[in-house]
Length: 285
Ligand SMILES: [Zn+2]
Image 1 (cartoon, rainbow, N blue to C red):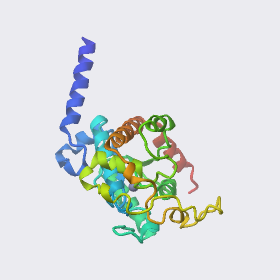
Image 2: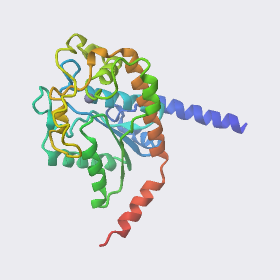
Image 3: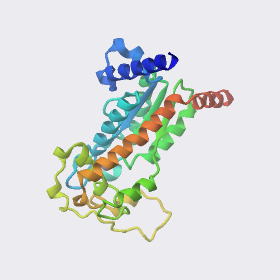
Image 4: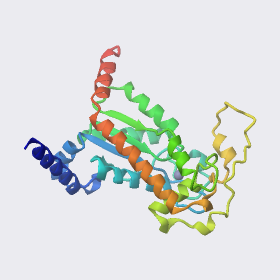
């Protein structure tokens, strides 16, 4: 009897999750309370960027990845997904057509104001998921700076480390080396073929050189604004022509599976909010 009750409850919550849109912009106001309950007050903020992606994949590639993966994740583990967000660090690609780079102080101000508004709407846990390789340094600093002022919400930033076991498995179907496959190369072109094949111009993938030029290789452990650009001056790193939708599907599915676990962990996390409160309490007045 108890098992049947639990099953009914489970079926009920799955049904509830299915009925309720996962996208913030698709929810109706009268469903907000249910969305807050089901998400345990957690909002997922996918961050992409608008930047050149070699000669063949769209400037919004990171945005397509971030939003597609997040929305698929939310269908498996309910969380409210914030609409398209594409403001971040991309100054090294201002020379490329379609790149959208707002001033540095503004991107931080905009992100903080966005988080404040998300929290004002009841989400006290906000999980940032960025698919853009130029964002991690900025986002880590940004998240660290949350302790500067008392806030009634916690910001989590998911920055996945490479999954070597998965990459090894992937190497069986890959055509090019993993090293140097960083931007619009085999991996990213493959996953675009899985997500939005209609936007990929495979016949142009060989029009530019995506190989590592190693122009600052004699300056190890030095960071400059042009460190990455020096290696890949076409904002293209890898071999896009080697891409396949088959590899892309594996990559996307792997990304979804990993993020589902992260979302579950954040929803259930009782510790971080308490530790954050403790830290605020101990700050000298
Ligand atoms: Zn990208």
